[in-house]
Amino acid sequence: MRKRFGVPAAAAAVLVVAAAVPATARRALPDATDNAFLNEMLAAINAYRSRHGVPAVRLDPGLNAYARQRAAQVSSDDGLDERHAGLRVGTGETLFWAGSSASSPVSATEAAKAWYDEIAEYDFGRGEFGPDTGNFTQLVWKGSTRIGAARSAGRGSRWYETCIVVNWQAPGNMMGVFRDNVFPAR
Image 1 (tube, one colour):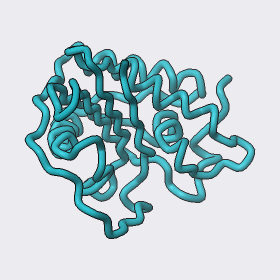
Image 2 (cartoon, rainbow, N blue to C red; image 1 turned 180 degrees about the vertical axis):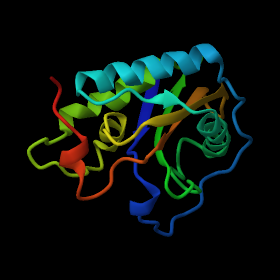
Image 3 (cartoon, one colour; image 1 turned 120 degrees about the vertical axis):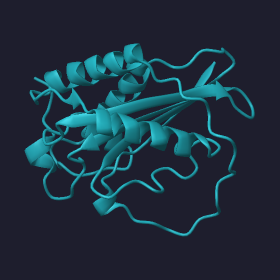
Image 4 (cartoon, one colour; image 1 turned 120 degrees about the horizontal axis):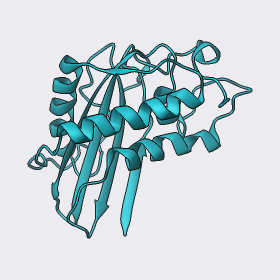
């Protein structure tokens, strides 16, 4: 059994920060990023983007390094409690977390599919941000051209956990321009 949690993507410029009880800090999960994971993530993302008629993104080495830092930071919280805390201004982010009794990390394809499945909740007629569709809209955001990706995975406090981070340049989910960047599937 896998438990999955997606976190809406948001550009740092439009994040609202509220006071909250701090998450339980713990040791970061080990880095589980390799070239196979990066290539799988790039292929999955670009397959979904192609459905919506937007240009493919490319991997950026600097964003990959940043995504690894973010995966370590995010995985040191118990289950994405802190979400986008500490995200660099001007960078978009999609997060995926899963816990399982199996001792293997979640694939890039599974994370990208979870983000894309938010399409079921997106109202193309309104063309606005929604808290349950931010991962989907970032995934297909026309103005995003580069990504960095990383995966941390290992034994957590209750089960085997996987944390996947994708950072985006230019960030998506910018208020007022959804209709210019998020299109229905062709």
